[in-house]
Amino acid sequence: MDPVSVLGLAAAGSTTICWMPQAWRTIRSGDTHAISLAFQTLFAAGLALWVVYGVMIRSAPLVLANVVSLPPVLVVLAFKVRNLRRGEAPVAS
Image 1: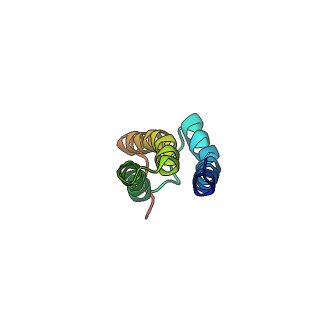
Image 2: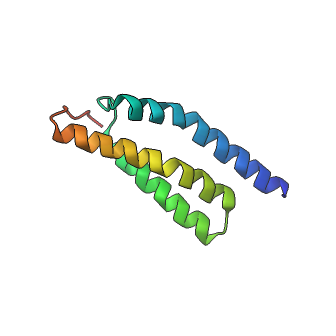
Image 3: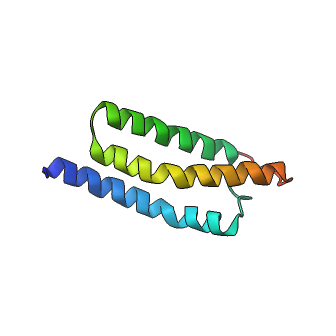
């Protein structure tokens, strides 16, 4: 593997791993009170766009990082929407 791909995988891995504990905590607890619906929606859309972009430029590190990050983000987003429907007060963005 070339050094640029190794660098890309290291960057992708570190940013993905860094965010995961918060996602898992939110998923386990179901508590989304402090999560902004607008931010979470924008984050999910951004990850999906990065996947598309990564596929278009054939960048495995870019695709991999965002494919791994997108499902938990979507789950947290679904929890947020569910909690808002149940009467959770929205957080100002």
